[in-house]
Amino acid sequence: MRHALIFAAGLGERMRPLTDHTPKPLLRVGGKPLIEWHLEKLADAGVHYVVINTSHLAEQFPDALGDGSRWGLRIRYAYEGDTPLETGGGMLNALPLLGAEPFITVSGDIWCDADFGRLPAEPAGLAHLLMVDNPAHHPHGDFALGPDGLLHGHGGPRLTFSGVGVFRPGLLQHWQRAIGHAAGALRTPPAFKLVPLLRAAMAHEAVTGSYHGGLWTDVGTPERLQQIDAWLQVHHPVDND
Image 1: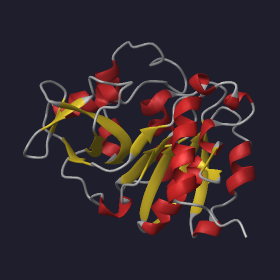
Image 2 (image 1 turned 60 degrees about the vertical axis):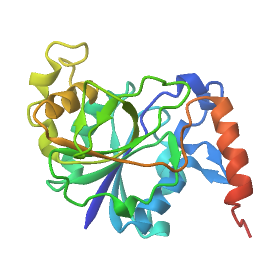
Image 3 (image 1 turned 120 degrees about the vertical axis):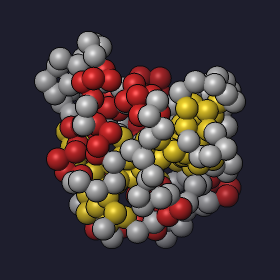
Image 4 (image 1 turned 135 degrees about the horizontal axis):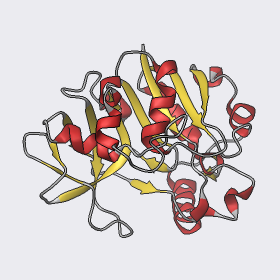
């Protein structure tokens, strides 16, 4: 049974005022909430169990999505409190619900046409990241993808992490070593970003990647929300009958 984690705890500050009363992953694009596109793709990929981490307006997620049965999924919710725990802290907080096997991750504020079923069930190292071309708002990218499939924190050319990947829980085993005294590390529960852990693992050639050349967007602003909504209305119309 494949498991998955959807990051849905962000405050959606760049999306205000739309996110004042609705969490960003529940904003509608192409006729349905953004997060529903992810749930459908995960179900198609053979995932049966999904953990959704929540914070901002957390009560709206179970109200909108229920237990996941309408997609053939079982959904559990990992509440992070009133303040989101960042990507690393959020993943650490969700681990007790995810188990010991590798799991797929999806950022709740993206849209892409990647086939999640093509992601490796067992990453060669501690993580496998789906990489995309650098968007205009992130021109310098995140990591370099080598011809051997290894990702590197330095060098180039650089690509952008799509927010979709496969992770082993072991990536978080020594998170304190990678984070050090960063702000939030001493909180209970701790709040920290995932990037330092990935860079530490990359230094030991423990992170692989693959390139996705299809459609992908970070739905981070009202303008980009409108753009992907208009595109989906034409190319993927939803039958509401």
